Image 1: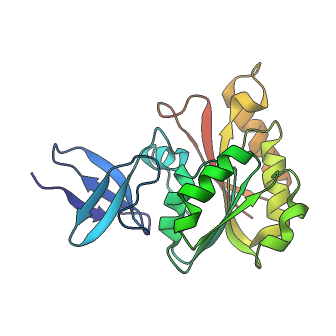
Image 2: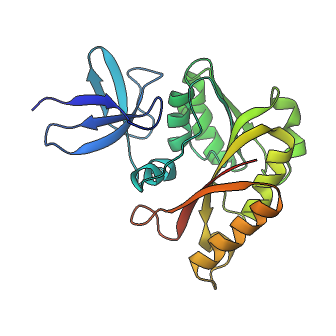
Length: 231
């Protein structure tokens, strides 16, 4: 059986790959053909190269496989990515927004951003690494050109929803979207994750967001949820 690739039925610039053994995987079209970011398999089909997208390494991929109904990130979008780390999910977002889009990558850990720059941003012109703390968005206003279409947040801070909303106040377009990977144990290890999710949803609602959906990421990520909302 040959490898087959088809567009995802719901989301632009995201693909489904049917492997030789019949297994189905997510993928994005590789913006930098021949280069793998985190050891993911590269698939070539009809002269186009795709990168398999590992849901155990990427909360966005996990959320899609957990039947997320809305992925606002799409080609030509500008995305502010909080907590870019070394670039696993960020690189797939880079693939999705394509050459005319842009991903502003905020990361405060020097080692992670060094890996992000050397392994990912150096080869992708639609990514800008920003070594800063997402709690202080005013520190990187000068690095972001205009308003962004989407804010994606994956940070390990106690006040994750507040940090996200503060960034959205400064950078997000009117009617823009957020994707928020909530890490319950980074907020309060003494509470049930479901309580944490409700609390973070309430913070966002109080800041003017309309919650579109909340998806739990087990079995890919324990005590994590993806919240999608619009301002």
